[in-house]
Amino acid sequence: MIENTAKVHNLVVCTLCSCYPWAVLGLPPVWYKSAAYRSRSVIDPRGVLREFGVTLLDDVEVRVWDSNAASRYLVLPERPPGTESMSEADLALLVTRDAMIGVAKVAAPRVGGGA
Amino acid sequence: MNGIHDMGGMHGLGEIGYHEHAPGFHEAWEVRVFALVQAMQLGGLRPDIERIPAAEYLRMGYYERWYTAFVTRLIERGIVTRAEVERGHSDPAAVKATPVVTPVVARELLFRTPQTEQDLALTPRFRVGDRVRGRNIHPITHTRMPRYTRGKTGVVERDRGVFNLPDRERVSAEPTPQHVYLIHFTAHELWGEAASAHDALYIDMWEDYLEPA
Image 1: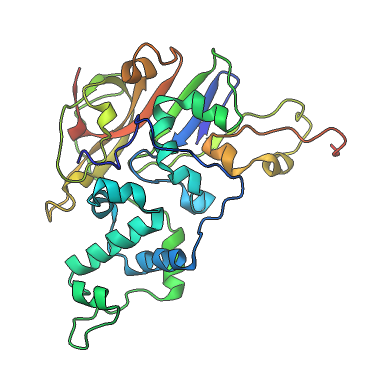
Image 2: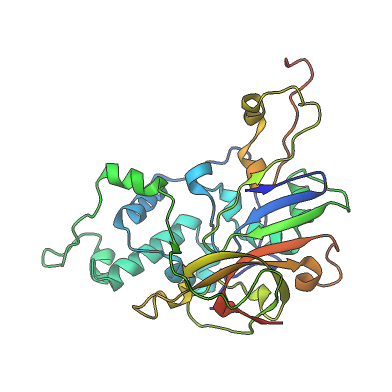
């Protein structure tokens, strides 16, 4: 488990094939197995993240994890602002597969949606 | 091997094609290939996938590669013959493999976390904090060392424990257990000054991939 914070953003890829935490996240999505994602994520993670709609400030450290060996990685997404009163169970519902690969951030629930 | 599969850092390989709800399978035969590969338990197909010629590899879809590698493996293991595959039906005189798993067992195998770590007390060659360099090696068979790490200097972040060196699995009947280390490379070291000064890459590397720096 690798943790995203305000200063660190983690991104998971498998450049050699398609290593992925199956047992937890299910089969990898098609784009995760694409030649473009595998080749570009290591050399241009910020560009790849922008294509996924995630733009990071220059002072955020991007850590790319090439899962080529026995370890499989899950990203623990950064807690979105405005969720301080939410329970662990409610927070878990906000977490997406993409956020656990590191290509998305977790968004706070829309205002008016309860809480 | 320096194959097309070792594509980390390459340019020009098309679009990522992101769809939030992309299905895992596109065709019914892909599901069958997936199930066959799980059920037959022939070991990892990566070395066979990597032997697919580069132009074919890029043209093929993901499960087409699996199928190609799977058939290669079946033939090499003597379970089917090339002639049977090409004819599309079995030779009555051919050797048959007994199915090794039932659907219940197959399901358990699918969701079982493989235990690949070896419980061996081998003396590690490197320690956390050591500066190490990816060796300039170009094995012509399977390796889990991406070429973008070769000749690059990083720091040992963690000792993962002892695992079998995959490079030797098809070469030697004897396992080759050795320490695996999580290595931290700066983006500058791997990709030059144009990369962000804040960014980094983490990768597990077997001891044979590394030398002191």
